[in-house]
Every structure is written in structure tokens, then in C-alpha cells.
Length: 136
Image (cartoon, rainbow, N blue to C red):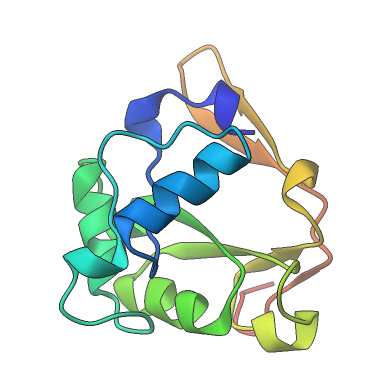
């Protein structure tokens, strides 16, 4: 999924330190973007929205223009509080704990990223369900 995204279109927002985040991503052969938001770069951790607001700013976007991929309830609350849309991945928490997300998928490899002729990012996924707070 990430290989199809230009580096200026995504970032990592994590509660881990930058050093740990980069080593974990390297272990699974993912090249992290140059600029990230890590736990040691914010005053308040998740569920505080500061981290996602900073992530949106790194991308020169408003939070409401961002889609956050999250696997934890605290991260979902942080992204919601920042004003982002949230796609939860049910890999580390049961689906029932991820209901505040806008959408929920089972695994990351179910997400497909494409660009249309105007270079608009399009994301396709088979949602397990819409979160309980999502409009129909």
C-alpha cells in the first residue's frame, strides 16, 4: 500500500519514540518518511489530538483532509478529536473496541491505493463494518 504513495502524501504518527519506530519499520522493510511525529515530539500522547494535528501540518493539510489508519482505541480517539477520518485495522484489538472509527478493515493488505487522472488519491477497502459513529 505505501509503495504507491509519494512521500509527501503520508507520514507516521506514533506513540513510540522515533528511534523505536524507525527500527521497527526497517525490520519489516518499510522506509519511513523523512518527517514523522513520534511520542517524544509531543507534550501529550494519544488520546490527545496534538500528534495528529502535527501530522496533518507536516503534510500541509488540515486534519479533516487526512485519513488516519489506526489499530488502537486511544489512537482512534486522538484522530477523531483532531478532526481526521479514521480507518481502523483490527489486528491488535477486537472490532468491538474500534467502533469509534469511521471504517474498520481486518488487515492492511486489504487496502488498495490508486490515483486518478487528476492525481487525486483514491483508497479502496472491504470494510468489515462502519464504525458506530459514522453516518450511513
